[in-house]
Image 1 (spheres, rainbow over the protein chains, first blue to last red):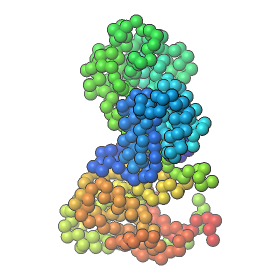
Image 2 (image 1 turned 135 degrees about the horizontal axis):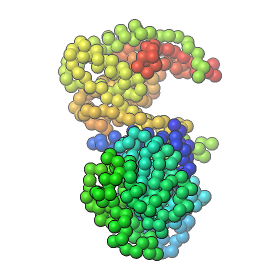
Image 3 (image 1 turned 90 degrees about the horizontal axis):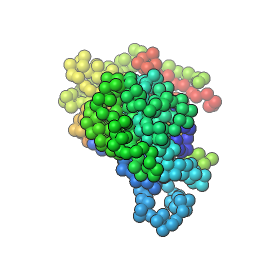
Image 4 (image 1 turned 90 degrees about the vertical axis):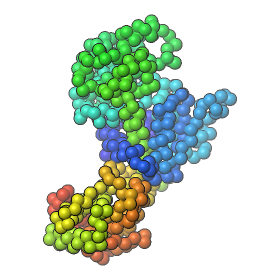
Length: 312
Length: 184
């Protein structure tokens, strides 16, 4: 039951029972967002900083709403309008914010390992909101929460993750989480975007989407990350679409009750056809909705209880 | 947990009769039963609330809805307690706005739980009235709160623990006074 971490840096460090604790807690928080007064007082007086060095709509606003619905004060840091453009180093920027006595800092950065680095000189709780191609733990948790709403058990579930695995922190966090909970994971994508080393995580690898979709319970589509395609990983968008786009015809290979997930933002007509994204099988918007409850749970579990140092 | 049982205050029969008496009082005081809703505070308040609802149904043929309130997010000792409390669901599938809300808990002690419950209820809507029912009032209030319906007044010392056990989860109906181990 207990959740004893000070930070949430990744799924890798969590035990299966800690993951379940987060999901169960999120279950209780879900209802708050359906109330007329969408606010509870539990984190009153806590200050949280949203420190995003990369663009984001859903994760940033989701964390912001989660914090506000728990009555915490949240400050949004925007790289474009900050001293970072004057050449302030990452460490100095974070130390400056830390000097304002926040309780938690939520960090997104294009470099893997930044949240971990931050914990080496910061007293605040650090939450990883996506670091490079490393991890995006709250996304994996909200995905698991969404899967649990639709499917009873993670055991023996076949989850097919499709697309740019190489750059995807969402894929990595999801692989860690799903394997910990006993699901079967199949990765599929163009060979240059699908490192064979991923097999070490206990997953199956394939390059043919039709085959990988056979009997899938959950189909997780990843976004083609245009901003990270410095090299040409595939010849053209058109070819990618022909080989790896989720269309209605392809979807029929999966189980009848299969669900379609996507961490967003979606490139309609590229990795997923528009009618699939809008179909009844798609839980994409449900994922967004669930994101708030899951992030409320994470904030509550990390900031809850007595501050160990302060009372020692 | 090795705790010493000091006294068995109520058994199945006594609890049953106390609930019957309180239910009669509720019916007497709430002439407009149509407007009454019951909200039980987790955990044992839920079962007491359900028993009362069932009794009202038998006596007056009225269905009184019962909701479940988890007050963890409204506690005032949040930053002081050692570990987090597990948050459980609040399940109130009806509007409390303009209703006469009967708040139900097993033991009334410091009054802080009831304060939290009232704040929580008012965030869910604006009830017309809130009434409080408890099976045991053990004194030692820290806030100006009193119950409208009391099963039994039970003077206790602060270090004692009053344990209400209900069949629905504890397999037995009884009220015990115990003393935690290591306390003299």
